[in-house]
Image (cartoon, rainbow, N blue to C red; front, side, top):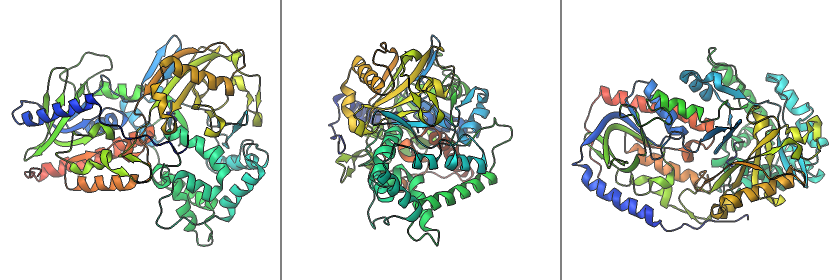
Length: 577
């Protein structure tokens, strides 16, 4: 779960704001003037956007020997990853953790920050708020290999106990889910792209969707499962159904057996490509972070590239902050990128360019060189009432309460008192009427993040189904979060929260909605005709922190191969028509 986090809500496409229109007019002027502009620098590759995708890509290109320039419109490296440390509290304004993957451990080792990695207790479950009670979702106890699988099924908080004695699902809901998992379900409709709600309802039933999957989708995407595409947004889960039907005797596609088949395959893949023994030990998928927050990673990359976080701009570094891409041209000498900077327009020439900008930031910037990217912002999405890729607003509100303010409740399955917050966090199905999407129990996940007498909570609120959250003041955001905490976690007489941060991200997480795949396919076709230019980002390679880090490693290999081939066989590029 990676939260950043009324059904049928569709945000209308607003006219281009005046400020954005002014920037486009200025960009057009820069395009006309760029041919005569002095080139500030010549590099092998420009990476535009210094979020996690862009910064990790720049790191890997640098390690691969490329002369890289990382350009960022903000005044720091890290994008939506922003960590704070003050008065004994450590908190995040964006994502709170990652599901550990080799790519994260690898880059931490390369940067010399692996000793800063921290991992959560693997047995801590996510909890779902339903019917005035917190219900644990099934989770193993951290056992390895077959032992871990047995714990997940037969353990004290395993699937079997969830099904037989858990109270999150009714008995009709449990029976329906068991039939879909163990016996079979209706086949997928031919020629139709299913939403997440349609897929889950077809395979496991409406109750599983409403009480388990709906809050999960809110946590991962802050999205609307009535518009999110199952095959695009949750492709790894959708793939299990294909594995299920691939088992000869499993004629009705019961997904439990497909899940087992995929797990066996995954185990073989990991054994065939084991982690480097010099890395710190880790468990796949275990929640992790760094001692001083996730910003440890982008700050280390910034320092490696010659621009330590908070230091004055260094002209000799490979990082340019407060540089906003205004235009991009292609000619016989490669690419010419023009930037708006605090010191006026600057031009950089490069053999290759990778954009990791959000889709909405591309409008009017790369149209000349890659008109095929226009659908990312302009294509009409039939059936969902939008143009292009939608980024809903999400607020991250961090508060702390004294442990004594939490309800005197013993949680199910032997997890102990609520005041100890023994879990990953709590999710709120939309049917429960709590406006907060989910609350991460930060101080339980990573001990030492607050003074011992407090519990630290990171709350996400907003998303596709609550876009009006963007109109609330900071005080109103905190009041909504406090109201949700009191309804789910706190005693009636709990004191006001200690407010550490209330950060609104107006355009937070790209939504992989119906029709997403054709947009990406059109972009790939356009790129194929424009060698040396890639338009990437988390709307293309996944929104989770590990997805972005993995992209940075894998795409660097693609760019380095291109640079090597172009260097070995130099040829003039034809000018774009």
